[in-house]
Image (cartoon, rainbow, N blue to C red; front, top):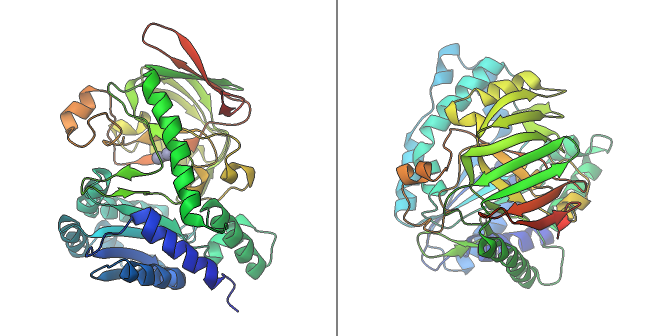
Length: 410
Ligand code: ZN
Ligand code: ZN
C-alpha cells in the first residue's frame, strides 16, 4: 500500500476541483505538479473531467532534474529563463483556462546550491513569469493551490521520524488542515467560508483606519489603505467564478497603507525563506518603512531580502488568524507559507493585493499606489501573532475597538 492514502487524495482532488477552483463546464485546466505528486494530479484530473473540463494540461517537474541545472549547467545560463511556456500559459488564461498548482516540494531543495546562482536563477524566473503572475494577482481567472505531502518535505517537518512514518504524519496534518478528514468535506468548506465571510464583513463594517498590535516585543500600528477591503475564504475572480484560491486557508486579510505603519514588531515563528531559517526577527517601522532590522539567525538573508527593491521594506498585506486555528494547534512549523501563514496573524513584506479594495475589480496601478497599496517583486509573509498578542481596531475619530485578545477574536 502506498504511504499516502489514495482515498484521501481522491477527496482532496474533489475539494480542489469543486471548492478550490469551482471549475466550470467547458473550462481548460492548466496544472503544475511534481512527478512525486502525480497521484494527486491524477485525482484532480479525474474530478476536473467529471465536472466537464475541456482539457487538463499538466506541466510536471522533477526535483532531481531541477537540481541538475545547478550541478551541471554552465555559469552563463543562470540569468536566463525561457518565456515560451509562460506565454502559452498566459494565452490559456486569456482564453479562460483555470489554474491549479500543487505545492509540497522539498523546501530546502536549493539550500546547498551556490546562493549566487540560485539568486540569479530566481530573478530571471521571476521576471519571465510576469505575464502569468499579473493574471493571477489581478485575479483574472479562478485558481487554486493545494499541497501533496511529499517525502523530503515530510522529513524536514518530522526530522526524528523514519521516512515512511514522517510522510504518514505529514499527510495526516495536510489532510486535516485542508478539512478533508471529515465525512462531508464540501459542506465543511461551505461552513468554513461562511465563518471567514462573517469575520471579514465585521471588519469591513467597522471601517478601521488602523490596527494596533501589542504584546511581548510588539507595539505596532498598521495603517490600512484607503478604500481597503477585508477578504477571507472564497472570492470572485474576474471571470465571475467564486473560488477558494488557497487550500488550506484560515486568514482574513487586507491591504495596509505603505506609508502609515509605525512602531516595533517581533516575529512569533521562524520564517523559512529559500532554504534559510530566519529566527527572532525584530524590526522598527517609521512611516511605513523598516528602518531597523535584526534577527537572531539568518540576519544576512533577511537584510538582503529587505534590499530587494524599494517596496521590500514596506508591507503589502496584514492578516488576522486566531491562535486556535487548527493549523496553529498542530504546533508544527511546515516550512511552507501556504500552511505557516495560516497558523498566526501575519504581515507580508512587498507586493499588495489589488483585489483587497472596495472596487478591486476595476482599480488600476496608479490609484492603488495613491491609496497606499505597496508594490514590489517580493511578497513574503511572516508571523507576528500568538496567544500573547492583543489587537485593537482604531477608527478615524480615534475610537478603539477590541479585535483580538490573547490571540483570539474578541
Ligand atoms: Zn496572508
Ligand atoms: Zn501573503
